[in-house]
Every structure is written in structure tokens, then in C-alpha cells.
Length: 177
Length: 156
Image (cartoon, rainbow over all chains, first blue to last red; front, side, top):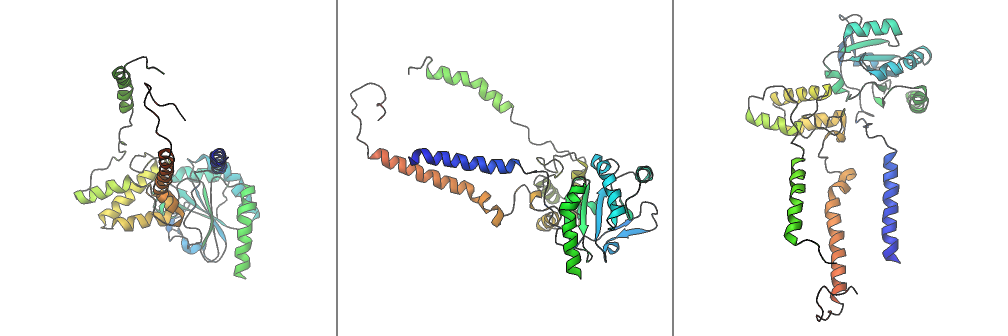
């Protein structure tokens, strides 16, 4: 009986393991930055290169850091969601314009609307490497103390916002009081 | 069952298949790197080793040495600069691991989460060895078939 049951059992186990594996998206790589301090950076602002956006600007308030570019289709897809969040959530969104043409980026914001509290220009992608960015759009949730609380890879949606971001924002606010 | 063709004919028939299989082995990744080699041969060697071991997260089945993705170029550039600045292989790997996580290395570090991955070949070999031993022991206990017939002994 064991001769028969053992292979069937092993086969069944493999089916379960592989079936679970099928449901996972291998392109989503968990960020080692979560739970750690956000990386140091200083970038010139998109609309005024004499001023900068730096890590210091993220301290003191829960914020989002959104990596985007005009070449990125997913960024166009999430743009309306970002506009809505900027309007309704009360949480500032800081943009990092990743390896983009600044002129196109300025036009993009003029035509589509600007959800960002400030946009830093990462022309050569050095800052993006420090943030472990590998595919725009990526959105980081930064706590008031500058800790990375969460990273979302792929366009932001209201569903993701409700399920992944809001609970962490509430937890961070609770811990800070 | 009686073979229709002699053994040598069957081997000869396989030859074209073998040749085809060898021909289809992919050529080792043609490097996408347009930059000139580093001045120091030891540094160039380290550079080649690292770029052939770091995964390009944009196109996950390629190393950054093979990938033409912009991020791969950026990371090659970053690694080149770190090597030129005299950073060690371990330092550069730590730099990448801190930013992109363990998935970035094609050869993952040995740690609790990867222990099974690393030990699986040994475990499978052991399991197979034990299975083989049991089969041999069981067969050894069987009576030896009498050799009065031509051809292989009948299955028992």
C-alpha cells in the first residue's frame, strides 16, 4: 500500500507547492530597505534647480516618495490616483524623477496636474540605486522619523492605498503619539 | 523484444542529434558592456566576476553583464567606480544586498532561508543512496535464477 501511497503523496505535495508558487509574482522583490532609515540623498528640484529636495524634507511627517518618469507607462496609469491622494489624504508626496528629460517632466506635470509637494531630479539614477529602485513606478511610505515603512512596486491604486498604506500610516501615527 | 538494428547503427543514428544538441548550447552570454576594460587586470577580473553574478532585476533571468537594460548599465557603472575606488568584493556585494536584497545575487548566501536550497543536492543524493541500498539488499535476498535459458532472466 505504501508503494502506491508514497509517490501519490509526494506528487500531491508538489502540486500544492507549485500551485502556491504560481500565485506569486516573481517580479516583485521585497525591499531590504523596509524597516530601515531612508537613504540619504540631495537632488535639485525639477522646477528650480537652485533648490534641493533631500532626506531632511521627509522628516517630521509621514510622507510618500514616488519614483516616476515620463517614459514609464505605469506612472501615467497611477497619475490620477496620486492626484486624488495628494488632494484627499493630507500626506505629502515627494517625487523623484528618474532618468528623465526634465523638460518633458515639467510638461507632464503642467498638462496632467501636479500631485507632488516637490520633485527632485535624479538624472543619472544614482539616488535610485541607493533606494533600491528597479522599476518605476515605485512608491515608498516614509514614517515621520525617516524610516521606510513600506514599498509598493507597480502603479498605485486606491485598493493598494486602502489595504497596504492606510493601516501602516495609522500604526505609525499611533506609535508616534 | 528483439532489436531491429544492430547497436552500432543505433549509436550512429543518434550522432546527428548529438551534434544538433551541442550546436544549440547557447553561447556564453555576449557581454553588453561597451565600456573599455579596467586598467588593472585583477580589477577587470573582479569586475567581470561581479557583473556575471549580479542579477538584473529588470530582466530577472539575466546578469547585469548580459543585460542591456538601463538599470544594468547604471549598476555596471556603479560597480566599476567602486572597484576603481579600491572597494573589496565583499564591500561591493554588501552595497548591492543593502539596496536590492538577496535576490540580486545569482549565488545566494548561505543562511536559514537558503539552507534547504544549498543542501538539497546532498539530501537528494542521500535519499537516493538509501533507496538504492534497500533495493540492492532486497534483490540480493532473492534466489539466483537458473541460467538454463537463453536471454535475460524472467522478471520475478
